[in-house]
Amino acid sequence: MFKNLHFRLGLISALFTLGILISLPKIPVKVDNKWLKLNSSIGGYYLNIRNGKFILDLRNFKKGLDLNGGIRVVMGADMSKIEATQRVSALESAKEIISRRIDLLGVSEPHISTSKAGDDYRIIVEIPGLSNTEQAVELIGQTAHLSFKQVKPDSNFDETKYYEFFQNPNLWEETGITGSDLKGADVVFSQDQTNLQDGNSPRILLKFSDEGRQKFSETAKKNVGKPIGIFLDQSPYPLSMPVVSEDLAQGVTSDPVITGSFTVESAKNLSIQLRAGALPVPVKVMHQETIGATLGNESIAKSFLAALVGLTLVLLFLIFKYGKLGLLASFALCMYTALVLAIFKIIPVVLTLPGIAGFVLSVGMATDANILIFERIKEELFWGKPHSLAIKLGFERAWASIKDSNMSSLITSFILFQFGSGPVRGFALTLAIGILVSLFSSIFVVKTLIEVFNIGGVKTK
Image 1: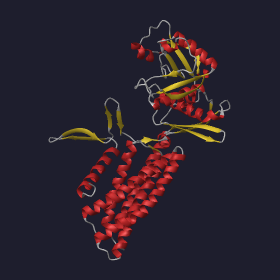
Image 2: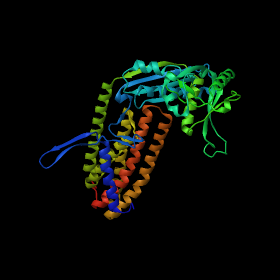
Image 3: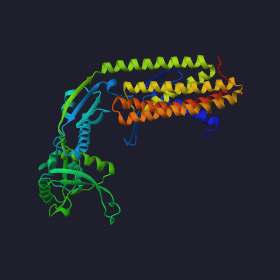
Image 4: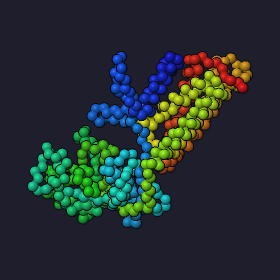
């Protein structure tokens, strides 16, 4: 299929058109004359399929903290009261809780990471586009609080009212059971093979202290057939609302298990949140930095101007140095740019200044691959090979160098992404995407265009 020249040319045309449409911002298109009336737009698409089950937002690039403005907070976690074996788990729990709190602020694309150096445990929070910094710092710096609540005695509960109780905070009252009564929470799997639907399904095992188990046992006796709500922080809505089964009518003799329609991922997330209540980690703000949106806009303008100037100079160099082949390589480079920007929107990649630097660097690497190919073609022509054979050998013999140099860059990008944080990861991700797309544009696109236009020579001087 890929040997068919017309198919390859059609694929290149379709990808180039699609890349441009996706990467463009929303541009109004208005035509009003006696032949045509049109009021529409191109670019900046927003797709909402099946009532929110699939959303593709292509309206704008996602911008990071240094481009969009916002806050960066570094918090230290006090692990003095946490057992050494539980500290990493407790830090991850605190990270999950902070992420949940930030979601309540309604901000988009927060970046939350953890850092450990010796006995120093830190949580790093970056929130782009946030204006109320005091509220954010106060919210994310609180210690997690977990509580178990029961329905009020005068509330008539049955299964048909399950979601009514889930959404109405006025129907609940405290039981006196809190996260301090828990020692932990783990994901377990049912081994009941008599019920194929329940067999091997994920559940949550609550590990109570002796005093906590006694409290929970008394609460369970009074609430058979009714739910016990598990609440985190000051949220009016429960994390989970398991209904007490009849098996607990005589109380709890071992660690209870929460069952429900859990996936492995949802069960894991809930267990992490429950552990956060059981293992509260006091945190304090060690460093806070506010970045203004004005600085971000200036950075964006200067970065894209630099990228545009650099790309233009590269295109002029290719055309001047390699003539018609350079012209085709310039088209491939423009296609490469459109495809990379489209991928940035689709994933979406959160753009930062280092990320833009990674993209610009990958443009240079794409150009480098074309130069290697063209120089090999020049050598083959110098040695007296026919034009068609020189082009074939030029691509084949340049491939080894292109492959090795790009593979080493991809490995470096993977290491930076795996072990770096924040801007470093952004640089590594944009560089890796750029390298992969550059291989496609330099080998597949340029070779196809040479064959289509039957260009058989380059400038040899």
